[in-house]
Amino acid sequence: MKTTLTALGMGAALAAALPAAAEYPTRAIQMIIPFGPGGATDLSGRALAPPLSRIVSQPFVLTNRAGAGGATGSVAVRDADGDGYTLLLARVGSHTVNPAMNPNLPYTLEEFRFVGIYEINPVSCVVNSNSEFQTMDDLINAVQERPGTVLYSSSGVGSLPHFGALMMLDAYGIGDLDDTVIHIPTEGDGQGLTAVLQGTSDFFCGSTSPAAPFIASGQMRPLMVTSSERLEGFDAPTVHELGKPELAALVGWTGLAGPADLPDDVVEKWGAWLAEAVQDEDFNRFMTSGGSIVELMSPEDSVKFVNEAYEIFRRLVVALNLEID
Image (cartoon, rainbow, N blue to C red; front, side):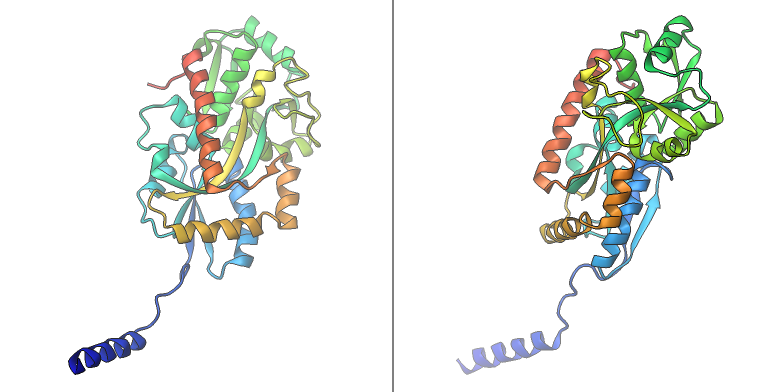
């Protein structure tokens, strides 16, 4: 008995001498943006970082890792250590549209653990303010009368603007999409919109947030929005007004996700941080100015939302024969 008590005493003394395990986070947290600068994901992530920085003691490092419709950055996070120090600004393109259009992606939705979706935004089809297209009818008539001459830009093959333009054209009865319009893929919404601004693309159908500054400055004109009601700052009819209610399913979203083995305690901490960050007045003002709706979903609701959106888009991909080989 004496030996046992002595051993226990020595163990307790040793434990007391060891430093307590450091509590997460103890160093900078990297947030990967899988699209280029100036796009919806980039704007959203950089708007979220300041309120997070006021809550969390460690810095946030935001890195754009664009390519392959969001796949390049997504794979980088999928392959990272599940310790909470590398997270992804997951987007509708990287985790809904691209998986729906490309079954050969190097990752699956199950390889990520969502912390929460915090933003939903409608889609707007925009043209240069000097464009001949004043309305959606003008654009559709040009596509029908001059097949193979109208160009649209996107943030990459398998991105929301790629799918959005094709879904919109299909709703208007345009067939043979590969031959009827010309796709100009870029590495981000910013580049896709710049193409419209420079006249190398005729239109862009993407999230409202990156287009908002161009519309506010008078450089671009919105032709439609997929919201249920007209958006402030976007003088354009809704898809319901245009008689195309099926296009209301075309919306963007942004959330945070880590590798599949992200620990429960890290997910819980992020849930608390996001709940506080999305209440920030400056963050809300910036997001709503671009037509976004700030709505925080739980990890479970986020997964359900992503899977349901994927199923909707996947059915459309099959119906429209839009699958990427």
